[in-house]
Image (cartoon, rainbow, N blue to C red; front, side):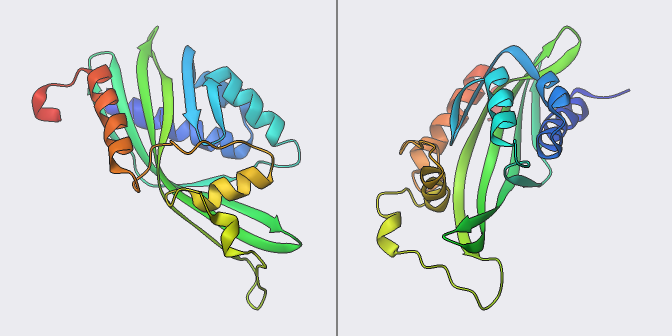
Length: 199
């Protein structure tokens, strides 16, 4: 018999796999009707997130995710999964092929919905990122001042998304501002209603 922890683990891994493979119906089925997504490039419903991901991926899936095992906590019909990820982009920087990697921890709030676990909220705590040429011997001609004003936890990602026409706010949860990460954890624990010993 599948335990709740196993079911939630499968849910969040399936959501990321279906997103990276372009299996949109499977991705859509992972989200509850009242779900909310709040990450670097979108704040909206789960349905909006799937549709905008489809739109962004018209010329191939945009960004892929390297996953680590999730940590899952269950309390009644609610669950929280923290999924460490590396978001990998192969991008063009003024004619030079480059690799951008954003390291983060995805936070999934999940709920038992008519016998199935579904995601009700998805947000991310950003850790750090890197940007480097993909091919040895090539060089990125990027000025240091282009990164001025971007947060250390996601400066390369924000720089790239802005170049791509997407807006990224300065107040995302990140390890460079520990209070922002602590706020997310406090909100999740309050929502989950975990016993004191689980905190």
